[in-house]
Length: 595
Image (tube, rainbow, N blue to C red; front, side, top):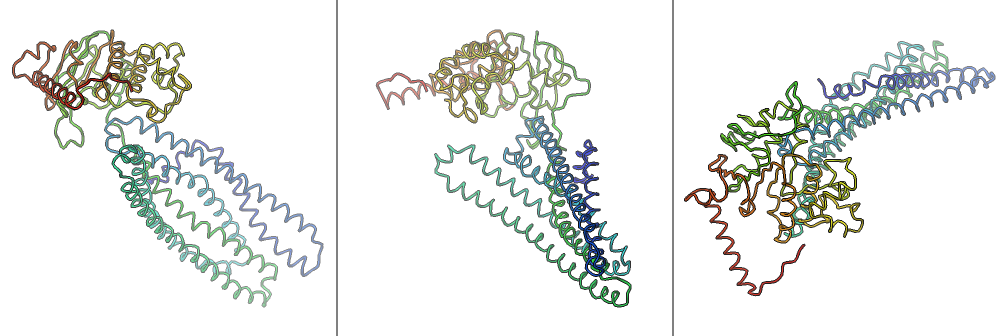
């Protein structure tokens, strides 16, 4: 389906509004034609025959009033319709993006997605509210004016209409050009949004490496590209008004030549000809507007194409028909010969034949070198991705057969990159449980060793923490994330290197909070420091996407030549080397300070 016609389907639920706007437009068009018609009695009856003009004056005032009412309601109703449609499209687009799998976001930058929501939807707003209203309203004005022309003199009307094909051809030709160039413009705006969002998000790195000039130059480059593209759009649009004026002037000249002869032979009165000429001139403004309307419609069509490209992308993680809610976890989780490959992984599997079982209440650690597939493995449990082959079951039920909401409601997560929102501390803690009471929020914060630093904030639990919690330290952010997971009280827990980016004092505090969090829960722990997984009930060692060892810490360390033993030995050597370096730099140990 044509993207613009598809866009108009969003307006169909508002038939009453459309009908009201259409009626107002008919009134507007008829009033416009009536004004042209009233010129005949003004000249023939008032100016030439010297009759009383009071009736004509009242009629003119009435027609202008009716025209104004038609213009107001047609504009108001169409603008309101446009805002409604845009709101629905924007909401649907945002929700559709959120519902996509992790792979969708891995392939697209945040700035590019925001450009679709802001820039592209902004273009269609003008099309639905203003442009379509103009198209219908001015078309009715043209119909009324043309009808009046044929009423007075069909031959003269046909003579004036001979330029119509000349008008239509450039409108169609330029419209196609506008559509193409507008798409280029939107893509350039998308690039500009991406560059700006990336630079703002990484502003610390930009400043630390003195790259402000480089980022500014990059932005100037995409800005220049956008300028050049918009200039092409402007060039095409600027050609239309002069062309319309020339063709309109030609029609008026032909009408004057032919009309003067008709008056001379008595076939037209001066009033009729002047009324005819007024109707012809009244057509000029609608035609000029319609030339712009076509260009605006083509711009909206280009934006609609880009919006529907996203709406037509369907997530790789779908609920199967008839999916049921997952009962509360009570027994075991099993990975059965799980293989997984990313779509853009060039056919290489990140995980291969992974099989293991985790019983309720157990703590399972997943270790291995960077790139072994640890994070991928735990991301399969909440179905951020779906397995390529094999299956993951919870209490014997394949997680692909249950609803996503019921599955994810039973999983809490704390990751290395703590994600917080520009909200209050209380709002962030209660993110997974919006109905939580202040007492429940405080209890979760106390359990996460976060209460003391929270009450020290200017407004306590109501303190705004900024985007991504940037007003807090790393350890404080992590403890808020742990409090959030505690409040959710999910039976399954995923900890993805939750302490690897912290200093020793912050790590100690976070580890205490994690111990509280993991109590009586089934936990999957990805850890860089092997010292943090000594108490794990089972340690899974991954190498190149395969499980090479499973066992407890003491068992695995005792295996000569084993992968875990090698990792453990490497970390011991690194720890000794770090200690020697620290002593050489500062032989007098100092007390560690918290962040």
